[in-house]
Length: 402
Image (cartoon, rainbow, N blue to C red; front, side, top):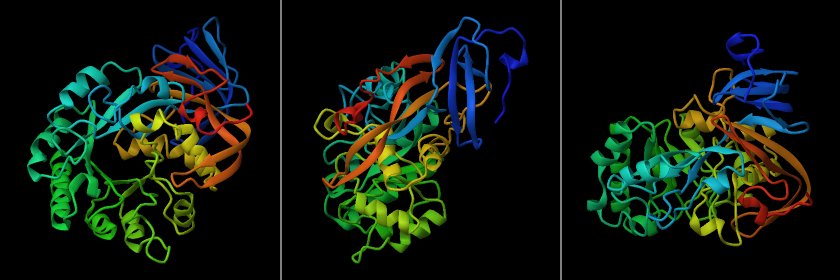
């Protein structure tokens, strides 16, 4: 990790913001240790111990983790248009998330509106997978093949790389119907769009009319299986409870596996078996949408990461899954890292003492002694402090004694 005492090595510069006294954890560089982070004009200007504030704003991060801004690879953010969409800023800025990726809420027809009226207006950086279905994910969006627009979906990504980063398709029966041959053709069209866009495909699994083995064997390196730990039919485990061999083969050749927690796609039992057999997640995401953050079952990204810590995932690996690996998955290596001269997207996180009751999508419970909570989010150099009495959506789901 490159470090420096002042802006560009110049003497006498005054940082706009100094994050003081935290433990910097940056998986991209492998650095972990005590350091201050100085920020000016939206950029990181120094990472080193005992930096001078000289009058700028100071955030006291003693006893806390300072990480790259978190990347949530799966949300639904097309609020007031798509049936799943919600306003991401109140949740993301309270949970350390500086970049959120919309998972197909818009298709070729309404992507321009998403780009202009939503992505351009949020403080949180919003990127998007463009749905193969012309109007985005909705009820039964690919019941009819005429709803697919390969050229339009690919064009949205190619023409607007500042927002569009890939293609999305849902292969559940509720989205494509019961016919296996029809689902197979939807998958073919989605892959064709990904190839035309030279971009990854994110595919929603669970209750698919074709086997998960066939799906994964069809995917290209870099394509993403979301809801990889779903308890639903055609999930990661076979009839005897073992991880399907095709998934391990897919992972070995570069297929990515994303959590996509939501309210129906995360099973502690499935995660345990997959971790034991080598199917760890490449990325951890929430699948936050309008119907799961307003109800009794709520997930934010730090709380979702907490569940993987409770299941035995090392802290550094879990943070990489929401920073450097998430950024690499969408081809944005400029994100998810802390480096001098880089974008000043930073999360300040705290491990808060429990006891904590964690729940999965099946209602199963898991006890844990600590919760990962955001205490501040820095987006493009601007500090957003988090009320320590409750941060992020997860506060209503699993409460701690903090």
